[in-house]
Image (cartoon, rainbow, N blue to C red):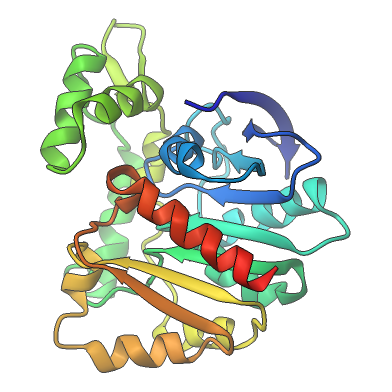
Length: 291
């Protein structure tokens, strides 16, 4: 397993944890994690990379070892944090950006707002807005979010990291016991009562009641000239949501001037945990073809 190290920087007034892999003189690769994840969840893909990269992977505010944001959470706030992150680590050069799920949904906005900052973009399962994702009317969705603001709760407790690892395997039948134990060790921490909870601000659980419109996503994508690779799992909830709506999905991908999609038939939403070797090979092949 490749060794990582940590550093902390301030982004927009909030202290952020940054996980680093590889020598600083290697080509820079920025990796963004998804919702209820943290930077350590990139480990399996990092281990599978064939070449050395200078990898910068933040914990979004409210997740992992980063501080919680007293002002709350939104996609646009994360876009601002990403802008500051890239200004810190690569002020003068476009970056290679790898993003999963929520991280990719943040990146989808950023690449349209700052297209000149992107050299290459790999989008792993970041397809919001996803058809049928929010149940009920928009008003009901915002109403549930308001209820959560007033009573955020604490999240589910676990007796120990082993129990959390079992829960991760229950949620993803393709996750090996070894990888589940690794993820649980990083995702969970003991609270003051001696129980393990996910390292996340409870307010992040319902932080985005309103997402982009389909047309807005396509508008952001159409402004990006850099090469783009979209990775989608054939067994993911994203693919299920677009079942029967393949034309909609094709139109979205077509909005990318220099983009293409690769389907991993057996992959789920967390393909980077299940088939990291395949994900890493696709990423490096894409980057090598366009370098």
